Length: 511
Image (tube, rainbow, N blue to C red; front, side):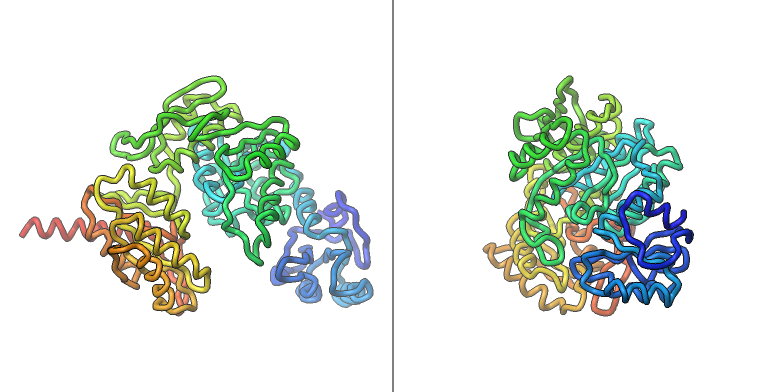
């Protein structure tokens, strides 16, 4: 595509260069600049891309897009750089917005003929998107998924780098879906994704607001709760239908905004009256698979559903997903079928074994999420809850206290271990974890720094009545330690430990 065509839907001023040059890719990182690329200089939260303009031109970028409100480089300096490296340079009003606009232009607005579901909120996005994806796939509607663990086109998968990808990657993913006749897509829409206009140009059939907690207030993310909240509300600017969890904080503000910016607004709740409800919630087992059963109440029918995930909060996720599918026209029997087949990596992921042990891997990595998880498990656990966890280095120290306290308060035994210690000493991290544990009198725990050995220990001490919860890393595939990054997947390590234990017990029986 010619640079002039790429810029055809935006206002710009040409400083220098030939706009008939061909552009094959648009980049934000000057290190990716080569002939045939356009480099967009964005004034970011931490880095101003204009300081890398000359580097991008030197590496061969065919087009440089700069911001009229930049603090660096005058027009004359930009002209000089452009002429020096034979690079076209243009100026636009808002490079962040223009980056998203030209991504839409390059890929010919692929979302226009697609049915998109966007889910925002502090918690529940990942699990809810997986459930929606399975409902659509199992009903014969090929569906894409974009999220924090992986991106999927139908059943094909690739690892993701952001919860919500940058605009170019986002539009490229939608374009690939269209090429493969995947006309439905469900995605996690993060507050930063909305703040940075990554989903600009996409029209969502359904936009969901799950809940609001204060997990992302920091200089690197959102400076205040209100900024975080306002960014999340931006999803409804792009939606036809809004779906809101009636149990969330600031409900009235969310509903008022949704009603003002969408065609219709629905609510869902596992606790009370709403447009979509889950009633008669109970732990259940189908075949040999534990999960939760509930009555799904919609505006037109009631039906019994089962989801192979434990805990009330997963009923909340299942209700969110089922209501989203309903609003997209998926029939009752197809919702039921898809829900019963759900699997979510690292979210209450059961590690299967032949010993009858209940071992789960979950992403709970702060005090609140660990508390919610363990409280929910308590209702169905016949024995002890054995919780294995650690805390990341070079991260919030308060989290260490709260995770220690929550594990001690809601578990019967805690195994404290390493978890992405990074550049900190494990002893410094565990000192604060122990301080949190000691807030609970007579709490039982042990410390095993080696995470692999800790997993083996926790599993070895378990009986079939116990629950072993391996918390903190969930779907993550690596662990960052002082001496580097190593491959480490909790589910794989737990599976290996269970296999070894099974072999050891068989050997004991033969003696």
